[in-house]
Image (cartoon, rainbow, N blue to C red; front, side):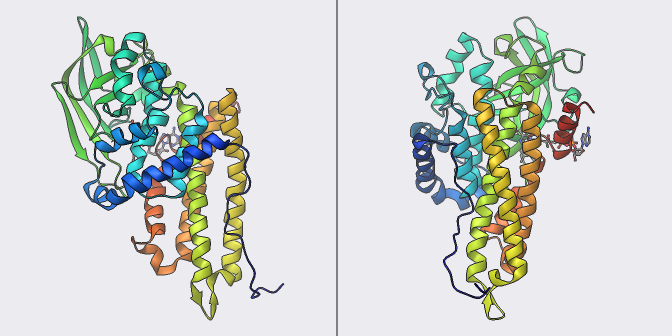
Length: 395
Ligand SMILES: Cc1cc2nc3c(=O)[nH]c(=O)nc-3n(C[C@H](O)[C@H](O)[C@H](O)COP(=O)(O)OP(=O)(O)OC[C@H]3O[C@@H](n4cnc5c(N)ncnc54)[C@H](O)[C@@H]3O)c2cc1C
């Protein structure tokens, strides 16, 4: 067969998979239908406004795609199968319509577990029904202007005053910061770098709480990322998640799942970018032939598709191991940095194959390029992930 012969070529980048069952695929279709109906019509406006409308959360809850891991007795879906989270993240990443949906996925994968796993019965009764209904929007605030990777450097203080804490300090880069009603906040309650950290749920309606700037980012334009400030905010000690001083352990206990969710989305994003690029290089002509027929293009695509298929296989295995409780923090850290670095690489190379159109924002690849860049930074930078893997090897 010659290079110029016409033949049917599969545009399927993802090989066969055995991770999901019929119910997961139905859920994927539900997520896709929700995005088409409720998110696509508002995507451009959200990009311009830098945040989504609050009703997106209540609509998502009504549709069953927000809070499905919350126990049924508190109004949620009662699922403990993370494959539903993974398939939703994949759908949003592979067929991106608006980064505004990221706030819903972040709530499901990263913030809600604090509320389901670290709360006592009273706290569950107070917060879970509102979160499950999408009426209480949640965020988690660790990063501060002076510290991100190094959680021991957290300075926001919570000083005991009777049955309350008085909280003073600032947080930065907080996803959902503009819409949030409840912020799981890492605060310093003692001197010890780790044992002096606690987690407090701070209602944003409290006197002394204020929202700062909605930050102007390189990408993820519809997903708000904000500064928040606490000036002597009085918070009941009954809002502590776990015992005082257990904050560091509360933060790290869910990190494997958080990082795996970023990794699974990164692979799906790479797959989507490659599928769209494959279509593009078949349609775009130069020198009398589709640019996909140049050996360089073929090699580039073959190289990227193969690399992403290898990652897909590893991530599906990690998702299985998360399910059976054998996934380690080191596995998740390695998966996070590997897949996100790969995504950044793939999206840059695919943009190159789009030529000048790749640099124009009305083409999806330009937005993919913007949105990809943060993935090697948030949820723990590549360098910190490599530290975790290296230390796990006894180095
Ligand atoms: C869009 C977006 C959303 C975010 N959402 C949230 C959120 O919802 N909640 C939240 O709390 N935070 C959030 N973050 C913050 C994010 O998690 C941090 O930016 C990230 O952890 C890195 O911290 P930093 O920015 O302080 O970088 P720094 O820690 O200052 O790191 C700067 C550089 O130094 C390197 N470095 C640091 N320590 C080491 C080391 N030991 N060895 C080698 N290199 C090192 C880093 O890898 C990096 O390259 C978000 C950030 C963005 C941009």
